[in-house]
Image (cartoon, rainbow, N blue to C red; front, side, top):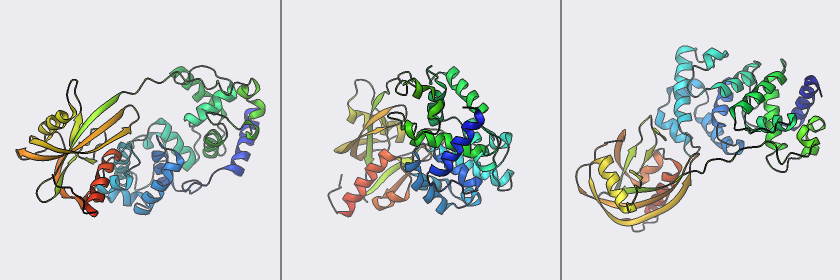
Length: 364
């Protein structure tokens, strides 16, 4: 199959089988940019409701630029990787201030935006502006490694570069954005990691992996390193007015700009309750006493896992001051839903609010 035949067959398949997505064929560079940011580390089905909610609240780049960061993070809450939201918000301000509210359509300008690296720039420029930039994500790597019969480790930089070069050669002058989306769509729906539906693939006649019966072996990925597992101790400090103490994570930290209950990682040979007491002393400059266990939960991030142990606490000595947090606040339990929390902490707030609404025992 020639490159021209591949382009024609793939685009014909895409025109007939592409999934309906709210940002697809919308013609709005802002929405396409937003979708690409959300789709970093997030599946389409997960991102779609967040996209719809985000666009409803911030329908234009001007609306986003004028918003308060806390509101942006609240709308993003639950989608994870919150630096994406912070960078998007900062970039929206730059688009309004420097580019007259128009998403840049050149490589040099669009890569000035926070959160827009080579992959995202290629996607936006090809899909929104029909510029000839090839996009290579996990789906494209799988499709092209199978099609070309590349058996080398796709985690290796050399292999990724070879696949990028192949994609650069394949992308057409006409409809480059649709071609990129077609390759990604093929990988997401037909050329799946396991049990690919080769009989429905428009490229199967020339696919090396299909012809050599190696779709189970290609692409080859070397094993991932085992993710570390940390024990986290968290203190829910409640005062006599039944207010709880929350802390704002620093901008430059993981989950920056999000609120949390203070706490941290258990040290070696340390009991988890002692972790809570030590962390609250370090973070807030106070002594606390643990009154009762509140909740234990497991949560996974991209590079590590945690088990969070939350305890109800009372102040014994000292006045809380933000030692390592950006800000701290005493708030009522029903106000917890107004603040953006990471997913693990949100489970704690949900339980607190449910107990409070049910008028169950919450005294320390």
